[in-house]
Image (tube, rainbow, N blue to C red; front, side, top):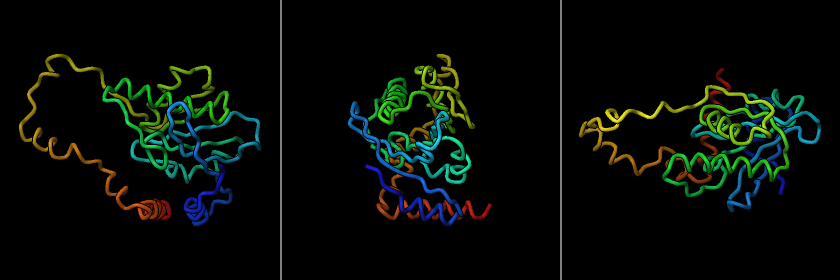
Amino acid sequence: MFFFCTSHFRFCSRLGLSTRPLCRYISLHAAASRIWTLSMNVGCSAKTPLVLLHGMGSGVALWVMNLETLARDRPLYAIDVLGFGRSSRVSFSHDPTDVETQFVQSIEDWRQAVGIDRMILLGHSLGGYLATSYALSHAEHVQHLILVDPWGFPETPSDVEQHREIPRWVRVVRFFISPFNPFSGLRLAGPWGEFCELRVILQECLSL
């Protein structure tokens, strides 16, 4: 089902963007979840599509100042990565390797559902990490890989570092804050959450 994003439209019009994006949910049948997808210029160009992956705690609104330029001569897709934005909340594994596999598989399932053969994959921060991981697993579907301030992990610490004593006060603080998600307040705001988020981003953009 296709429909226009009214909140994004208001956002785009206030920024002076002439091209309106098309938004829809892409169902991932294998995982019984959905990926919120924004697209522009689809069907208007035979060039390889550009796919945007946002970073931690972000979503498709991250790219609002770049959408029109990036979609000028090729199809463009921006997605809310699984577990972020409007995409489905899923139960992730507690094993980091399995979580990475889940993310990569969701991107591959999305690609198949949309019907893209090869793509230019652009990732920012966490999205850069996921884009790299996806490219390593599915190189045949990635024509170019573009990384913007990509996220990464240090090498596994030595046994000495792993068994280093953590100060008691640090463990106490970690115990009390670990149950809380830093984005819980935004989610509790319900329909006002999106309005508040867009208003903050708009103010930041217009102040540039």
